[in-house]
Image (cartoon, rainbow, N blue to C red; front, side, top):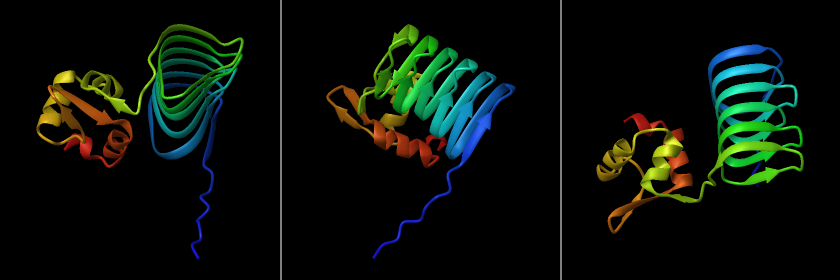
Length: 167
C-alpha cells in the first residue's frame, strides 16, 4: 500500500511595493496585493489580486490576474483573467479563462503541446540561433522533421527544471 506524503502548502502574501527580479524554484502559492515592478518567475499558483499593480514579465504555472498588469505573461498551465483584470501586453497561456468584464489590450498566443524552433525561442526567451545550435548538438530534447525541429513542451519544461539548459 502506497502512502502519499502530504506537502505543506507554501503560501506567500505580498502586500507591499517591490521592485526587482524574483524566482521561485519550488512550488508556492504567491499572492501579490501591492505594487510590483520587475520580472517574476514562479512554480505553483500566482495570483495578482484586484488591488495589485504589476509592471513586468511574469512566468508561472497557474496565473490568476485580478489587478492591473503591464507586461508579458507566460502561463505554463492556465491563465485566468478575473472580471477586475486589466492587462496591457502579451500573454502566452496553454489554457485561457477570461471572465466577463476583464480588459485585455495586446497580443495572445496560445502555447501548444509541441513547439517549433521559433516558438521555443520565444518560450525560453533566447535567440533562435541558440535554439538551433542546442537542437543540432542534441543538447535540447527535440525531433527533426524534414528541415524543421519539433519540441514537446512537457519535455522542455522538464529539461529546464533539471538545470541542463546551461550545460
